[in-house]
Image (cartoon, rainbow, N blue to C red):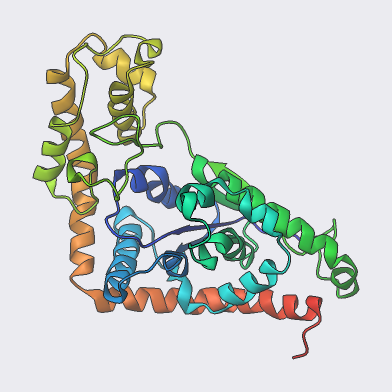
Amino acid sequence: MTFSPRVFSGIQPSGDLHLGNYLGAIRRFVPLQDTHETIYCVVDMHAITVWQEPEALRRATREVAAAFIAAGVDPKRSIVFNQSQVVQHAELAWVFNCIARIGWMNRMTQFKDKAGKNSENVSLGLLAYPSLMAADILLYKATQVPVGDDQKQHLELTRDIAAKFNNDYAAAIAARDLGNAEGQFFPMTDPLIAGPATRIMSLRDGTKKMSKSDPSDQSRISLLDDADAIAKKIKKATTDPAELPVELEGLKARPEADNLVGIYAALSDKTKAEVLAEFGGQGWGKFKPALAELAVTVLAPMSGGMRRLLDDPETIDAVLREGAGRASAIAEKTMADVRDIVGFIR
């Protein structure tokens, strides 16, 4: 048995998708359809690690699905579904809860950041979040996962869980001939690291990541913003008084300038050096209008597509159900083997 090239990625439906979500993840999903089998999931089970208003969760789930499709993900070429419709995610996560160690979970920096000093009062689900993430990936034996810097540690944990499962059950895997040439039942999933300029920062403070939790709507470009809103937010973005530098070195210690140049580079598929070669030495009065025009050109069609899809929720739900059926067929094959390997009677 060999592991065929398969990409899995998921986005949490927490509402108000923004430019950082698009450039850091969603846009990268589209070309992968040409080179891999691709599975894209709205991870709504992850969302409830903190309490969600039920109707808001349903709306946010449809919003993520609409963003996938409007960005160019083809539900016929890729599997697009929401996590909770495929029950094997929870089933494999429980097996992994019994494989992983509490010390592994306690070391996760995202858990520390989100729990803060209140770790005794957060949900058990928040602590076990990386185990469910490992199940999401390994349920489909994904060989690669597009990840940003903030998820690299979770993917490393996924590899640790896969390795421990393969080792703990090596005899059962071999006896049933369920492993590859190295005896692995689960693959050692590799990261597809996001390229440069995918960590998008706040338009109000270049030292902070763009986030839906920022109280200022002016800090982010929402994927549902229309052309006027996109242009206004860029033109009002915080900058310093200096002109754009000619060399990359000149962006150091200038977080707002670095962020806006990075956004232009990402939207135009250029490097920051190429952007500075075009705009270096010019003031913000020249650069901001150019960036606004580019952002509107790239994002406004997607925003319009998302709005049209969200006006027809039945169509989105049908896409998710169809994708869940295709995902379930793969997931059940994996889980049938897992049940057999660990010794469950069925």
